[in-house]
Length: 233
Image (cartoon, rainbow, N blue to C red; front, side):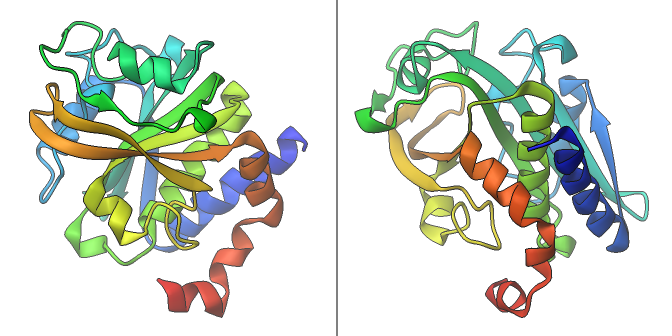
């Protein structure tokens, strides 16, 4: 697939957001993301994966976040970073490096990720997704997850793209729904006390392969406007 096709897909998503009255900005300072989401109403907390208090983050390593505004007011955000995992996703989870480079947990969570789904290579990772209550139901999770994944293909040639979600979000079906994140699969990954988050949880990995992302890009964002998807939303 050509770079022009991927860029066209990205611009189609941006245009759809702008038609809805949203402005979107690429932000390099992850400290700004922490302040933005910490002040956001009904947020799920600060994900330590994207928090510079836990990681030495910089634009040079691919980390950034998207600020979405509506009438000059915060409407949504999503964060991104990449990991090089030559030893696999499971080893990355076991290392705790995905959560914190500085904090060694006293009781790390149990890894339950299936061995058959051990992703290796360049991995794009999204998280820190928040949508203002006034704009929920307007498909922003769909647009933002697809936009971040397309940018990871264009900028970093990733082999895989993953997210990590709590059990409640997994049970909602949003990570794999056609009008949601539209990942290819979701698998159990962690159980127990997650020290950087400060809670006992069951967490799941969402995954889509590079081939899957390219297939979504080839299909095009126009599929989002079909009656089938509108009824699913």
